[in-house]
Figure 1 (cartoon, rainbow, N blue to C red):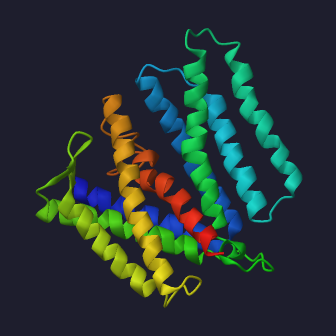
Figure 2 (figure 1 turned 45 degrees about the horizontal axis):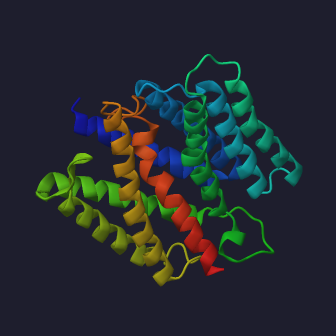
Figure 3 (figure 1 turned 180 degrees about the vertical axis):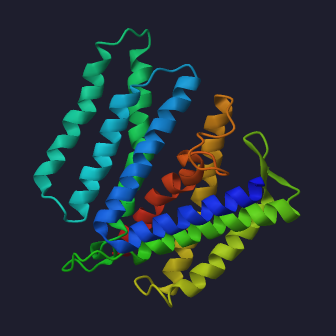
Length: 276
């Protein structure tokens, strides 16, 4: 089976799984993204280890995954506020645990461990804000509504897909050759155009945002998902690996597939909050 076919089949499965998990209800959303966050954290710390660092891989993954699931369940009104008190002790356990490790670089180890939580868990928590009405002003209604979140991923995938296809077909001018030699200006422009076109029509299906707001969201996603991809590429180049993992055939690892989400989510969240 060719790499293109493998990539297409895996991509279709990813899309179906994420849309199904988001659309079904808030519990399936939290469960699905808990798994994604957990695998992403483990991959991040594994990359750091390949770079000669020694993050607290297990504790960092547990703390980051717990941070996501507790915060998201609170945001989605699944648990009361008191459960958030669990999060802070988990973060400080990372500092305490370093006392019992034989390492010459405790500050680096702690910094890398906490960076993984900041880089991966916080953006996933912010996605939760996009899936309930207060995110766009209906403060008296706490029903789960995944429309903005689904729109977010549809735009992101459109940008990724057409940037890849247009780049493969027409790409000549390198976008950032020292970091990602395969990316081209033509591919980035193609992804942006198709994303904007999709956003123009999304208001017909997801009226929670106005047309101009969907267009702004698309612009934010295009810009910051591309930057997120480049950042992840730089991480991988620094430790001399092609992919962050192998869990997704044809796509690499979780970090390879969700690199754009990690950077785009905070900026989309900020814009949505601004609209209030």
